[in-house]
Amino acid sequence: MPTSFRFSNAGFNRFATVTRRLVTISQKQTSIMNLPPIPLVDLATQSQNIRDEVLQRMAEVINAGRYILGQEVAEFEGEFAAYCQVSHAIGVANGTDALHLALRALEIGPGDEVITVGNSFAATAFAIAYTGATTVFVDIDPVTYNIDPELVEQAITDKTRAIIPVHLYGQPAPMVEIMEIARRHQLFVVEDCAQSHGAEIDGRRCGSFGDFGCFSFYPGKNLGAFGDGGAIVTDKPELAEKVHLLRNYGQKVKNRHDLLGYNCRLDTLQACVLLTKMKHIESWTEQRRQVAAWYAEALADTDLELPQATPGMRHVYHLYVVRHPERDRLLKHLAERGIYGGVHYPNPLFRAAPFADSVTFPLELPICSRYANEILSLPMYPEMTQQDVERVAQAVREFSLVEAIER
Ligand SMILES: Cc1ncc(COP(=O)(O)O)c(C=O)c1O
Image 1 (cartoon, rainbow, N blue to C red):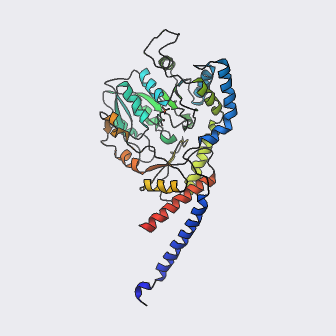
Image 2 (tube, protein in one colour):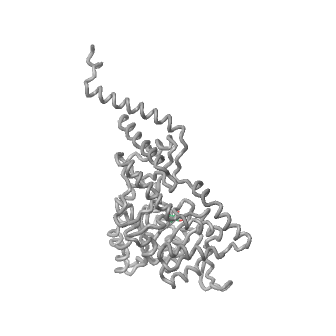
Image 3 (cartoon, protein in one colour):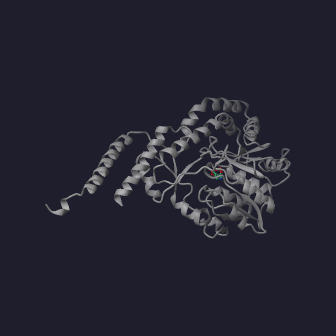
């Protein structure tokens, strides 16, 4: 018998193991094909559960015809301020406006520099650009994906006026360190809380550290409206007063315009949705944290880099972001099995056309740049079951095996 047809024992065993695994995979794949898809977020299921109460509240608004700054907006503002552990919340039209109005209230403008991270959603830096100030993008901590306080300190110049830390993906940014830097350099701090409703550092809520906390209620957020919405929270009465004017044409009294304001009001019908959802935000947040715990267990033996929650911080898992060097192929593999991931965010903002004049510190932000090619967001929503999580993990393991065989 020619030697090329002979298997060594070790070779045969390896061949048998791989074949057995492939048969198991193809059997599982056949059954997976019949399963319902797992979306990145599932807004419909959650909406069904609160639909009747929302409609009841909306009917009252419609019957009374009070659509603009109705009493539901003030009621929601009171509840949301208490939730954020601050004295004031001002409802606005969206999270981008929240950031923009916060910077306007601090009178930031041309000639000023504002420091933020290079891996956030576009709106964070857009809000800075709207004021005419220069955006200074700094790199991130490689473990938490959040702003690196040491880089912030190094990036400060005599033009720096404010820092915008972003509590990205639901993990609080290092606010104690940031506030200490701000105090030493007399800088304002505007927290971007669009992804961090209910997140905490040692029991203190995100949004309550800085001069302002800015929230988005975009439908997919942890607290989401049935359309756009946002809020600014603060403990400073004089700043709250200014934002009240800014969101409504600079008017305290109708037709008296005390400053150049905008039309950025939170819609009363959206306040109805948010008031209803406030009753559930804590249980939904705990469910997200449970889903994250299931993921951590189920994915522990895979080659994904998993999110690391910082001790003492309450991560609220707006997104469950992992890393893999073959990110795009993994996303495709998952989608072929009815599992839909996403990328937050694939194109580093500091290279986008509107930021041609921005500053990066250090040059080209090496961690942000590398992670933009490696990060992917796995499905994450409060209604996900442990079986769903197990299905995602199984598909990830299968990907690693197929990759190993093809290598
Ligand atoms: C980090 C971050 N900042 C700001 C925003 C802007 O919020 P909005 O879409 O409500 O304007 C978002 C959300 O989209 C966000 O994720």
